Image (cartoon, rainbow, N blue to C red; front, top):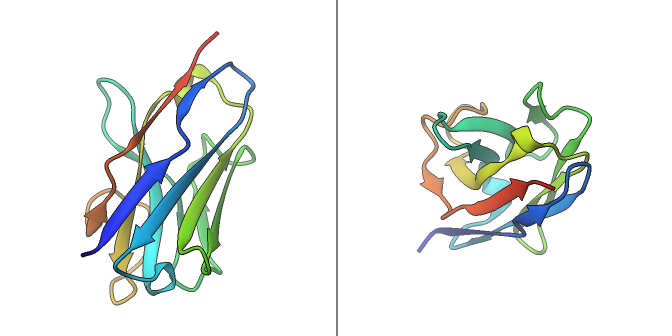
Length: 125
């Protein structure tokens, strides 16, 4: 059974850092495009950062460029999102999602095949 499990969310002060993890089971992360998405209260889900199945291409939303870093550990079968210089606008539920390498790669919520349950990130003093 294919499963994605996010962890690492929590409450952090503005300017702080967090590392989110997306652990995959039932498939290998290097055979799927993996992305991080977030949804703030009252807003649509948006792409934050995505990595393609080869691991060589990465995308970042303009709002997180220079602050967030996506990475992948094929041994651990896990994708990470390192977040720094967090601000209130980064608050939301963060989800990871996967799409088979057989399909085109992008960082849009529509078309993702599998989703995790999400982890809450709250940036507040």
